[in-house]
Length: 192
Image 1 (tube, rainbow, N blue to C red):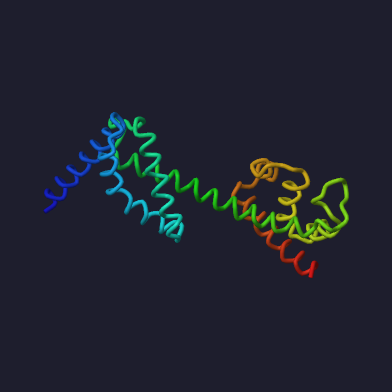
Image 2: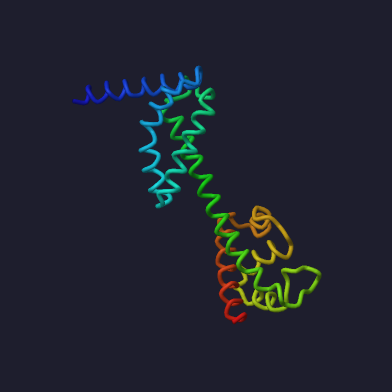
């Protein structure tokens, strides 16, 4: 039984590698169709596990397979299996999507926060700094306050803040999310 599984696995790997080489060398659409039919259900399942949303899982399938089509000439059979190469493209694109999703969440929280302050008195010629906001920033726990001040007052990038405060970049992002969420809640209460 194991021999049969090994043989069929080897045949499958060979046919995938041949299809990928045909896409790379001849832009063979039939070969690409073979790859798409084989990998799309697996990529979709991986995407559903990561994103828990059908639309994003399908976007992962589409973008991964598009990258496979475009980058097929970069595949080198001597360096590894075709399946490994395709799954690496999938994982890398998935990480890109997750990073983008996290950045959008942070941007939405900060975008929701700053418009609330547009009617208030502005100091130091910076429309983001109002007396009310400064008071609320000062009421944050010190680790969160340090991150907010470094990002929005000193205008440092997140990696620069991580270096300045000697903390991991992920910690900067977590503290920023917590701080912006607290500020938003506090300012919404004040604004009502």
